[in-house]
Length: 217
Image (cartoon, rainbow, N blue to C red; front, side, top):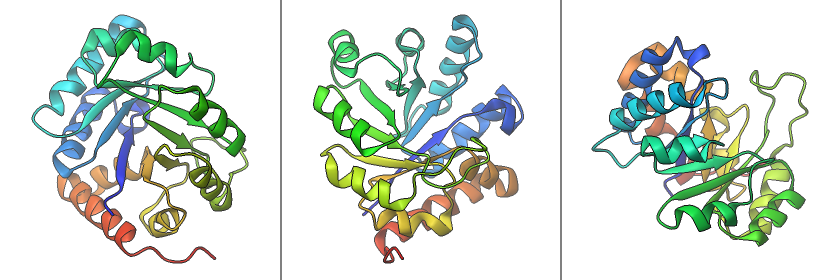
């Protein structure tokens, strides 16, 4: 199957806002499905301006733009949805405000949490992690593939894996039944190393890994 691929932004790690917008444009052209704008330190006005630029960068593609946590920014900037942190507002409350087809996702870190938020309704997908050790969250013990598999089996919602994701690990993620994956460094490095062609190659390699999953050890 073709995996859902989600680019999570970090302007500090990719070289600033202009470079972030450029990478989003390249990723959208390459076929990345979702972009989560996750710039928590920006004030509302600056966040709106950045999200508007990101929306324009992805215009004309199938890529959907989400804003981390800030529903007000997502609506004001014309984004396609919002990604709620584990501590965020209930999805059903957000859905009551935005309706459909506004896309709503949520981060979860355990099977129990996945079950609870899925039962509350209003969500389109879950983002489960941290699956592997990652430089984004040093010192955090990874949940591992078994926990990811358990979360996937426990809920009907699509579950994306995040945390330490690489192309080499994509087939192991696919073998858990996950719908796809999300990452910061995976996409940023591909663009920095090889530009648009690097992102196209990344999308192709990840899709191939999900088409031919290996058994998880």
